[in-house]
Image (cartoon, rainbow, N blue to C red; front, side, top):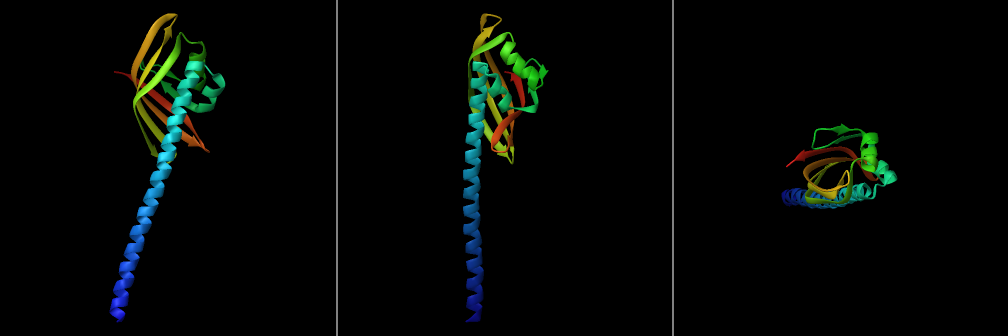
Length: 153
């Protein structure tokens, strides 16, 4: 009789651990899905702020240590990036990310997409079609842009 109790106890423990593992994986997946949605929202807010030339929103979404790489190879810090959006020769009328993927690792979010934009370049109509990698970092409850690197397609 004792042998059966020990076997049952071992089986019970394994079942319990299996159920616990499934439950914790589900919770982590739900949390990850929520974080991916927040990062997606941050990308949308960033591009909307670029189109609207909203200085306050750009500064809120970009980290102080931002490094912003253009497809031309030019690298800007936060101040240069914000100034370029507000006063630069290229003014966006629309920005659309296509084929976007978002992954997370702790407090880091990695976004890849094709950056499609329309606007004017020194007054002349222009379009942009480049690859883009964005790195977001979570500060408190907000995801903020830490790095961006664009590349020619």
